[in-house]
Image (cartoon, rainbow, N blue to C red):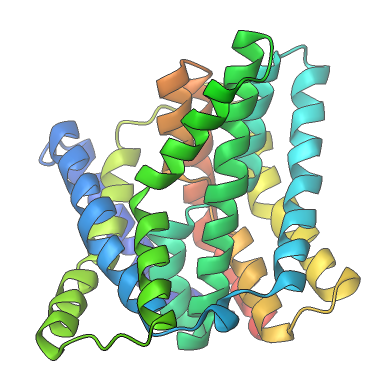
Length: 308
């Protein structure tokens, strides 16, 4: 456990460094926004493209894995939704709270950290978790909020979801990389080196950006944020572990990677969606702040458990 904690500590130290820079005002919210944009559209996209271009579709697609992750995630999603509705929150707020309970920071934190800690073989499983989060749950929150406001489902909602997926650089870079792999197209040496250099900026840039963005987050509504952090850091990995190790025949190594990914703190893009739709942004902000702080210990515990 101590060894794992010491291995994860540098990642969270980078987050802490970003938080300090943002908190002191040395790194302004505008600077954080531009750094996040650089990581999201350039560095992380280069890393994902390079990873996926060196994998075949058969190495990524694992249907028992997908069903196990979906089952565990949907189970916690429904619990969080039920709790929100019992508190007499509307469908929109319930959708946002459920998103907090199951969407972890896989893109900015999970990919760089889990691949380094669990080995290159973790690339496929982590990317599959990311794809399910973006395609299934990223679409679900838009459908629920927009459908609730319109009072019905429409082609316009589906069009919005489809355009959102097509514009997401993580989806685009993974898809293009897999296309290059499927067509067996060689990547020229200088291009590969360019992608390697640019992709290397993703890890420090993403972690620093997480910390700097947390500096502007507030810790309001602590009771609800505490519950959502518990759902994300404890219930989600527990449900996914049950589905992957007990219910379905998932490869043990891939199952361990899946559980570690499920243990990650609430993702920052949930706040972006909450702010965009004007639905409980303060609640989401507090959930991100609390879950990230606690995950310094809980992520180490989960990784130690799955590696053993």
